[in-house]
Length: 414
Image 1 (cartoon, rainbow, N blue to C red):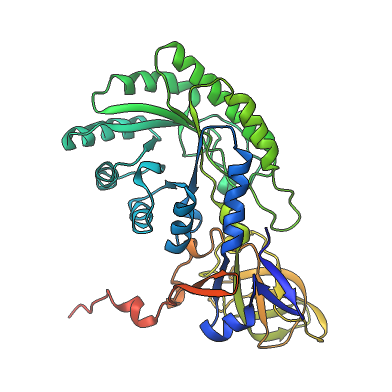
Image 2: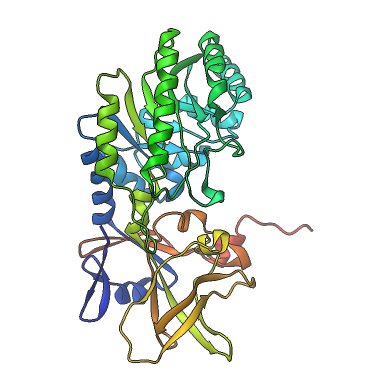
């Protein structure tokens, strides 16, 4: 579901004009559609109907408390990668028994925090982590529920920065090493083996790599069962892509049919860890043009959003559609949309055809995932406010930061 519609020439999110939001809350501003978030979650539950499953939202995509609370009320679990994300999930009303903890560098403090909270599972990513977790659980008088994150060496066909399932990636355990480590885990007194986990990458458009990885994980689960190591769940990760430009996202209904066929007669339940596909299309970044700079070789639209607000274009040349909030009878020109940060790489979009004037509002589309969650304070820029729209109701779900707030924890060395 795309949350935007144009009414009388003005862009709206659901029933609220973006111009109204900009006037009330200022820019840059992240705006999310509740209806789009709900619809995205329901697409998964519909596709997986008939398969015992848990959809664990990947908090790293967007950790706003209001969004986490919405997914918790819809019945979602959560995929976390830090103690901070666990704290967010709990503050938002999430059930710790529906939390899986991924990530290659879990600290002792984070392990203690998650064990005390009673999470569903640790997705263990190395032998050293397994040994450390057993020790920490022993010190706390607990048994840690674990799955091993296996690396199936499947090429997801995505950007190398967001590929996670190849041999050269830092994530997971080589699948050929997994049987030995499962045997070791089964012998540890303070570890309880409950599952297997796999995640091959992000922004996946083709279902074939997902199916290939799944088949390798099923084969591993069957081999473990023959050794007497029975798993409670199979976690096939996330990574389903969305349309930023002209991509054709995977057909979730077709993926669901594949999973129903493969889980028929199996004893394990299914876990998935979607992030981008739940929140990406539900959000826009609203920004205002400060200056138009026309040159002999290139034109620039200098806006008040920057790489610190939306890192994806600067980080890996990601594309986001950018559209004027209001139609304008101005000359159509090609612009690079750039921010005020002092870096040549500070751009939101390159070579865009726009009919705009100074002061106009632009909407950066499909910005709900890895937008605010990757934002920084580079150049001492306060991070944007966030708003959730529910039909015609407006909820400010994060205040705009202040420069005074940025300096609040600092001290002079006298």
